[in-house]
Image (cartoon, rainbow, N blue to C red; front, side):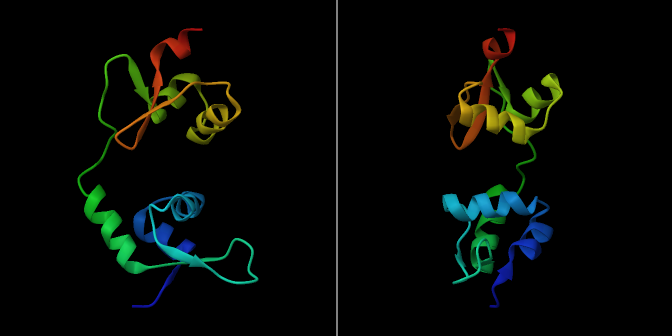
Amino acid sequence: MELLTTKQTADRLGLHQATIVRYLHDGTLAGRQLPGQRGQWLVDPASIEAYQAVHRGRNATPRRDGYLAVGEAAKRLGVSRTMIYYWRDTGKLKLEQVDGYWYVPVEELET
């Protein structure tokens, strides 16, 4: 099978291209970075199929009492999901990861 660009992969999975690159960095998707091409990746189609098999039927983050999914927290705060992750990375907002999903404790939004 021919390797796909991050753009082709993003289109196939219905995700943002930056998400694909993040998945390549964290190992969610398999691929290789082109030598001498800063930021250029090629994605293994088999890893795309494996990702789809795992995520098929997953339309939403499972609910947890006392927590909001990142998307829900972003809507409540009127910001993007990316901003929620930025705040996590800079220590402005506490997030917890459970079973591969990130959650914002409700008390974090009340302060």
